Amino acid sequence: MTRPQPMAPHPFDEALALTPVAATAQAHGRDAPARFDGQPHPAYANMVGPFGGVTAAQMLQAVLQHPQLLGEPVALTVNFAAAVVDAPFRVEARPVRTNRSTQHWTVTLTQSGADGVDAVMLTATAVTAVRRDTWSAVDSPMPAVTAPADVPRAPFTDRVRWVGRYDMRPLAGAIPQHWDGTEADSLTQLWLRDDPPRPLDFLSLTALADAFFPRIWRRRALMTPIGTVSMTVYFHAGADELAATGEGYLLGQARSQSFFNGFFDQSAELWNEAGHLLATTHQIVYYKE
Image 1: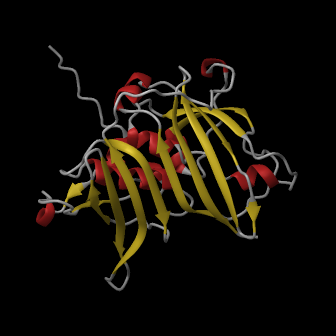
Image 2 (image 1 turned 135 degrees about the vertical axis):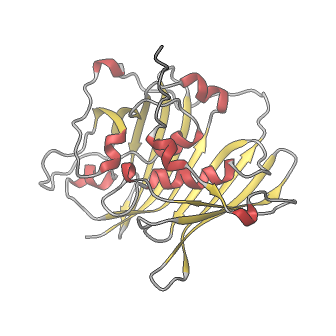
């Protein structure tokens, strides 16, 4: 009798693997930090270093693996102080304030430089909370769009490896086909999900919030050098709602409000196929002429 072979771990879960540092594998006491070792995953490589959405998810993973965790993520802000390199890193998560139902976190990611000195590459803050059943409403309904099964998948480019880890189906505002400086609006709508499909959770939702190409490329059709400076994700669903989404597609809608003297903003919403708003996200991005 042939036994079924165990399924290989999803590349995203491999990327999220963090190892507790032996000296602090168990953080004791109120507001104690926990430290973890990790490294970038080749499947999520960007033009330079790793895809920032996965790095942000690794920061959140350190919070979720902390033994003093209270509740579920409500907000995450990641500040990209320097470009993460393809080398091992260390993440430290610290609950700086724990209240009855909310918890406030600081997180840092460091890497050793050529001189052997650790340098801070990212900083982050997070808020987790124990949600309570209350009156709820959404003032940002999902747009009426074509179902994902009826939208062709965008062709894969091997120029950036992380793009191949997502099934993206553009509805409006696709990446320019001709880099000729033709200006357009900054709006993009698309269906997207992990590839191969993976049940949605807070970590994959964090990464998906960063899966939009830079708004300035859409606005100007010029291959402008860019880099995210700060990214915030607000979570509007709990673990049960994310689990109900399963491996389904999310509708993402992104736009910019302003491009000014080297920085532009980027805002986006993510709904599941049932029309539930799961997250909103905001970035400030550096660009160079």
